Image 1 (cartoon, helix red, strand yellow):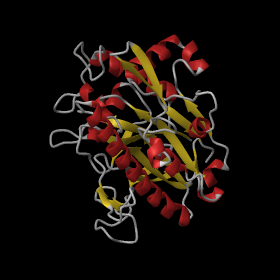
Image 2: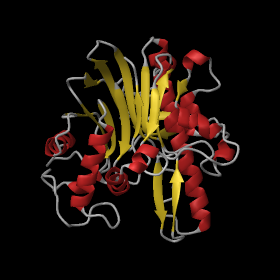
Image 3: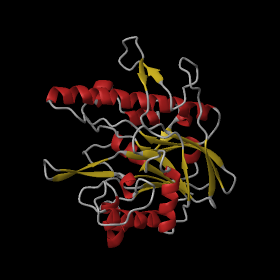
Length: 341
């Protein structure tokens, strides 16, 4: 089974207010890219990656006039994708949702959130409510929420193998809106604090699944990676390291080989899953932000990971139409794992 995650930059902008796919020369949410060009590029990329299950980060908005599921299934039908069913969990407070697009012939999936709504319970609360965690050790736990609640799924392969899947779009650490260097530092520290707290919350949910003997896949955009910013030293570790649980016994760890490569790097070289243009500097910045983490029982089955990077993956680079489509469709690239189930 191929499972993938893909952050599609402002996919919402490809649809009208009533949920129709727009294929014209109007501007998309990507700088300098039309809606028609981004939609066509995205269709080509998804056909090439061809996953059985695809977590879409920044999926189209769910609101009173249109549904995320309807828009994704419209897109799949337009481009003849076999991933023709979509699923949404808790809608977000933004115009960017976390959704699953999948092939119903290969698997079944259902939104299956865990935890209680109330605070102060032994179990970590549901992801659409509030979690309290004391990250600065001042004895006063701070309330943490998700603007984009993680998507919790019970997935069953056609073979009958069942596992848990959690789709994530964690808090961005960028100091958006800061007008002075001091504000940027303050906002950067606060955003990292919130991102780490979200990962603590996620890890608590994973721990419950592992304790129950349930295989787990955690995937999505964590807006984080080992050594990604200076504030990591302030807190001692990254959110990704919290999720991997490298200080735990092997049976309790999650694995993503790209994250492990970044943690073990010696000369500053690491895989990348995103590519952003820095207009003020006139150059591109690459970052490792997207992951597919698997539990130890799934790791024992011999999974194979791949980042569909147009310049780092030789097959992607050699396929010129696919290479251009990857650059046009989003500022992130798909990350996939092939799992023998």
